[in-house]
Image (cartoon, rainbow, N blue to C red; front, side, top):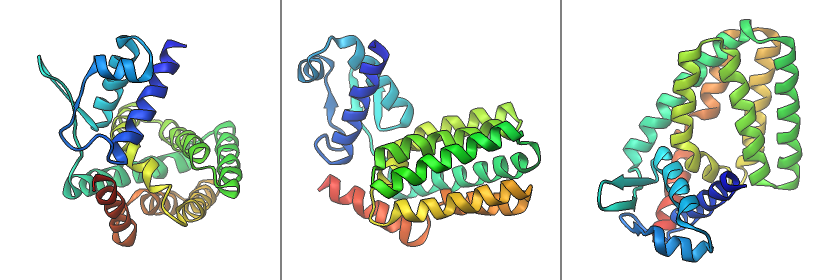
Length: 218
């Protein structure tokens, strides 16, 4: 229960940061946040630690926690690296994925489709997390899996935000289908290309993400 409460607070704080309620550089005072959420300081502290892992919060010794938004160059560099790491996972998973894991991947994708059809971005995001985690594991490389998970956590708020852009759920679903088809066929090159294209935020997709961040900041 305590862990879930901290996760709930982290999700709410993430939304408040991304919608501009807490601006760049704002001090996130534990006492004030505990009062706001009507909890003790412990789950607030845990929530801030989670946001620090994703990079939305910077924790400074003896000063506290402050909102930190990455600039557009840093953000595109992280997505570029994430796209390449996930492409390697897909290429390796194409020949290493088990039948059971492939069935799990189809199930996660089916749940994504249901969420897309109902316009439930939060549910889509949860199932999308499961979808990617399966591919990380099935790459069969522990170091690569850890690096993907680390960077994935760093980009969580922005991956979640871009799903709210108009038409993005349907586009993401089509990209998922291409990834699954390539893994079904055991085609490593196609799987890598499909997952790279799915994760990368280039061109119009990136400009729309940056525009939404600017709008929140204003």
